[in-house]
Image 1 (cartoon, rainbow, N blue to C red):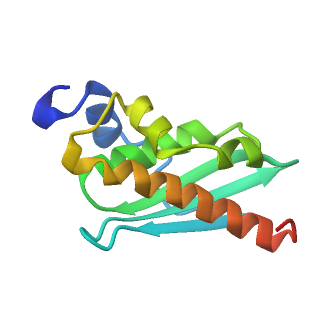
Image 2 (cartoon, one colour):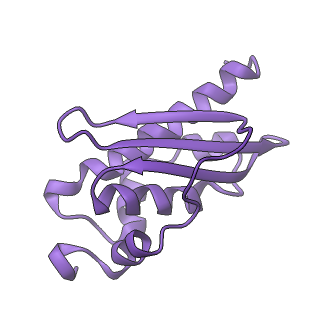
Length: 128
């Protein structure tokens, strides 16, 4: 960990977020909010043949929340709905190279947004 306890991966995803922005005509949208700090993540996905082909996010929150959102979109692209649904906060945490204890909530935010988007997809496609 470096700057403020953040790994180079976190710093990179915060300064150069991947897949940021709203998506036109997403197949599903998931949202997660941390009531304690107010961080909010909205995740948009496009799915083809049960594979997530595109993922974008809008996040209001700290640098850890933005980095978690960015890396999570990279983690779920190319995965099936079932594979993506198994992504956990620990997997996000590991992909980021760890987070300071006071910022662990950011990885939870990402996991919850993925699960919310998948639930939305399954509901819209009558799979749930």
